[in-house]
Image 1 (cartoon, rainbow, N blue to C red):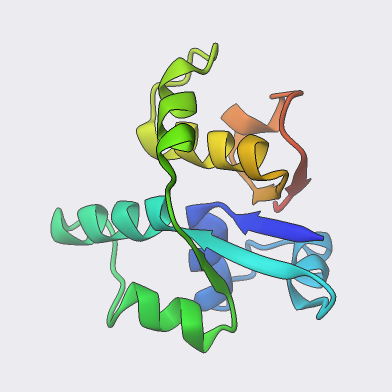
Image 2: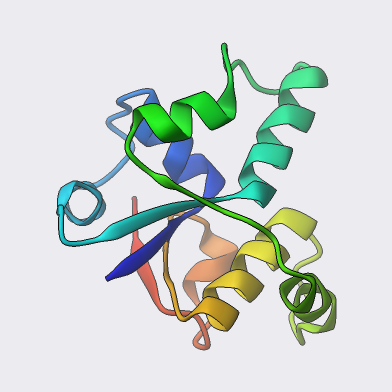
Length: 127
């Protein structure tokens, strides 16, 4: 299975947080799964860190590699799809992760309530 970690799930994993539930943790630990972290998450972490809304030391890209995850670039069709989503949620990072999940046929690992009820997205609930 190809999993895309929502930004907060990546942070929970990296920080060994107990917020991540057993099912999500097992899916991430399963060596048969490919685990992706989007460039959108790297961007989100960098912005929130600069604004003082998030504490994350070191390189985000380095943390992705250290955890054995794969980097997922943002493709122009995905960026366009994010803008075209018929979804009232306006967070640009969430919109991009949803578009990437749909475009790439991924399963989104998320604990975000706004995404939980989005039927068009394959997901694993992380809380």
